[in-house]
Amino acid sequence: MKNLIPQEVVEQKIFIIRGHKVMLDKDLAELYGVKTMVLNQAVKRNLKRFPNDFRFNLSREEIRGISQIVISLKFSKSVSVFTEQGVAMLSSVLNSERAIQVNIAIMR
Image (cartoon, rainbow, N blue to C red; front, side, top):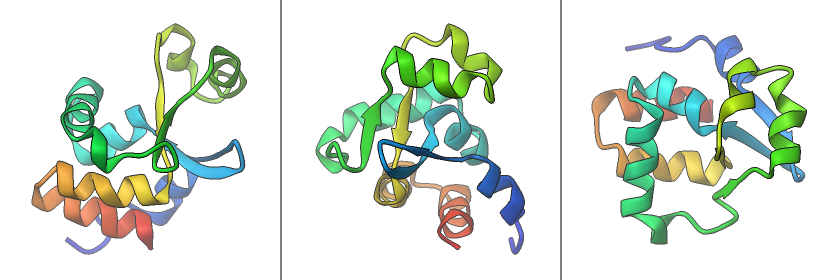
């Protein structure tokens, strides 16, 4: 599964918000091959694994700020973002071979 995701694709999905490098829930779900709702449900079932420095919700202003780049966010009611530690924790929640490989690609 080498080069599952090109590095450039991952880099384009990283934003700096509140001083943290983060990835959007919808982008991570796409990379993992699951629906955003499925990813967020898995996180909600395991909230203790995701303290505020691993995952946080964006304010409407923050969503508007990045929605110029990510058009589909304009209509999202809630957008979660994951820091590097949160992304690493996702592999324990989304327990699949693809999740493991995606996490490795993101960490690299």
